[in-house]
Amino acid sequence: MTATPSSSAVRALSLEYKSLQEEPVEGFRVKLLNEDNLFEWEVAIFGPPDTLYQGGYFKAYMYTSPRT
Image 1: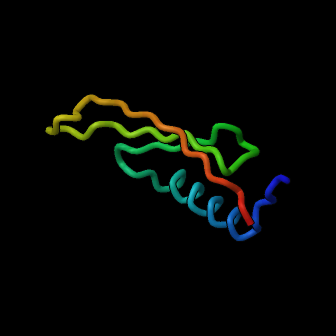
Image 2 (image 1 turned 135 degrees about the vertical axis):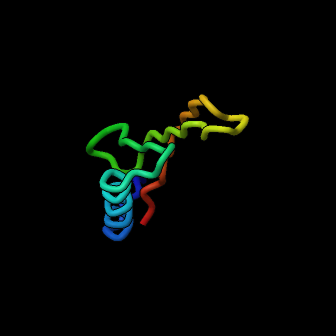
């Protein structure tokens, strides 16, 4: 049985994604793995200057279950 995403989950993710695209957070980037699926994101974090992580590029994938 496949879960169908609730409209509130789709709306919340859509608003959050849109906000991050319009007002990006410094050192942080998100993009959708597939433009048709708000439940799979690629996340990149860039190491901040003057820290042990300076120059680092950290990539992760976020998969959210579309449960109702």
